[in-house]
Length: 623
Figure 1 (cartoon, rainbow, N blue to C red):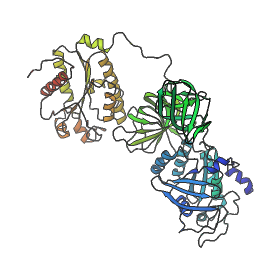
Figure 2 (figure 1 turned 180 degrees about the vertical axis):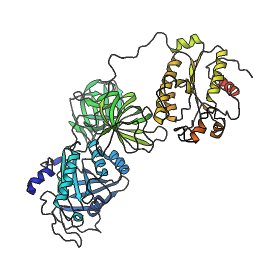
Figure 3 (figure 1 turned 60 degrees about the vertical axis):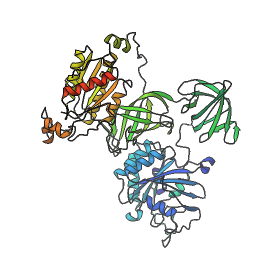
Figure 4 (figure 1 turned 180 degrees about the horizontal axis):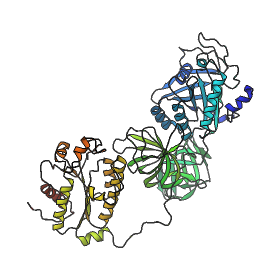
């Protein structure tokens, strides 16, 4: 087979011609590859005049590096480029999350002597997942394999087999030698300082690496150009005057068009558009615009405005790919802060459908995600939000997950589709509600949530407290950590994931019992702050009382009423709190009890006094 025919196997959609607008806009690039694959050398030779003297006058190297954003700038006589370089998986994930919405294309470097590595596959999958459609595979260090065409062809074939499962639309392959400048800049070989200009790969007749990058479009990867404006401010000086100002995320708008406020669903027509230079007939993505409307519709800051014919989704559940970015594992049912381009709320990953092996692209059953793993998940949010499918809009379809205590970003997600609640299900309001039941019971319902180590005295104090409340005629129910596992939670073990689910179920039961007008006592180790906060969030502010039974671990081990600490120390009992599973003490518990210093009855009296002070019970305390 001649090389000219082979080139067809090495390239897809090569006849893409950038538009005039493309050539005016900088092309945002991502450079990735394993260590020693050549990406750093490539950028260094573009940017460092002290290392290389370029005889190709078509290239202008500019030594400009934005160290904060890890961005590098260079240009040819045809266009400008903004490049980000990444290497390790951790660094790669962080950079691509930060730059994905702007990245137009990527260059993957493969060392010819090493071939396809797991890291190559991981990078390639991540590029596809983040919607980057234009890719060049630069097979570097060709001098290390004596510029062998068959080695290049083998790498191309292996990569094509893998990439066939991905979503690249434009894919090029270029053999390069940075040592001698082959297929590097504009001409086939470039004379660098003290380096021969000989073309060592006459069998390759395709474009050089820079020429391939010049052909990429800044727009081709953006499939959806539907109008989206993020509202920043609203002006209502009088009933006859209404306008809002915001940034246009995507698409364009013109006078007379009908738009819709995504959350309210109300629509109106645009009377006038004012941009930075004054009134204009239209406005487009990347611009800040003030829109004067025909009608005063229900719009507020952070709302998304869309064209009536292409509205975004509004839902409180969706399916998404999630990349986990934290050393602490992702646990389904744990509550995280979820941040979109326009709003924050809280969310739970209700189902980890599968995780993805980025080396084989196989879908694997999993119970959690670890650092840099990718999972396909279902999420439930605390409120309905506006979003697009990520493949349609990379800005309104993306989100990050944040730990609600450390404020650290732990994950990044790309929305696949909205999940809808069954249309025949709705909340039924009863005539007999919580307030009526509380009045009949002559008490203020609440949940008293006991947390602490095993053996700290939680159950004993809760038992004494319930006895005192019962003697006073109060209606109570005690949920005990051991007892609940004989029935409702008998299917759960003691892994971190099962502990999260255990507390979620108990909190929902406690909520129902409080709605029944009862004073609920919940005695559970509940080792994680996140789940205790989740439980608290189910109740009104004055209905949740967190009680930290603060007993030192040494005293709990000394007591060891069930012999569990002894088994845990001997390695016979895994995931035991305080030994090989963490306990996160409350930071602001309403009540702290020292069971190492006082007996259970005395501490129960202290809790009774607290409940009296909060109006939950009218009880005479025995001393």
